[in-house]
Amino acid sequence: MRIESIRLAHILKSLSTRKNSTTEERAASQQVIHKNDATNVRDPDVLKMRMANKLRTLKRGSAHFIEEAPLVTIQEIMTWEFGDQFLNHPDFKHITQSIVTAIGCSPKLSRHLNSLIKNLTQDDD
Image (tube, rainbow, N blue to C red; front, side):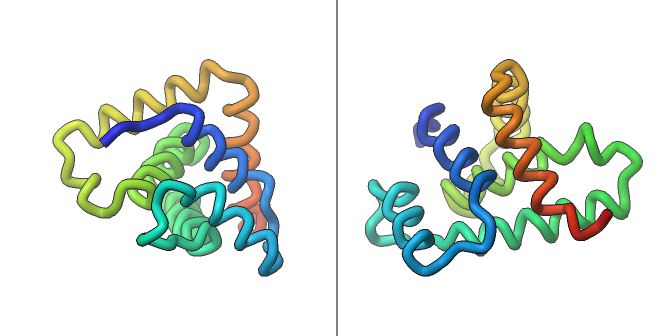
């Protein structure tokens, strides 16, 4: 299992800039996101729905939503990217926290992540 920063950045950017996608946009996004994974078609809209549900639950139940939301979001993306078995990896929490820390050091990626979180939880405000 190899985590490519450019691929993760592209997935994050794609998710943060997509609203409700049309069929053509969804197909194009899936081609880019899944270019190396022809046998396992995953729908980015399903990922967004899963993240939205997790983030809304977190927002309702945590006084530390702002601090915890990036980690929850990245954990969902990584699970979607590598499968549910990735949750059982002994370093899952360390890996995802390291990714969140690295994203925090990049203003551009940080904006994409914050935009994604805001878009997925804006109905709660």
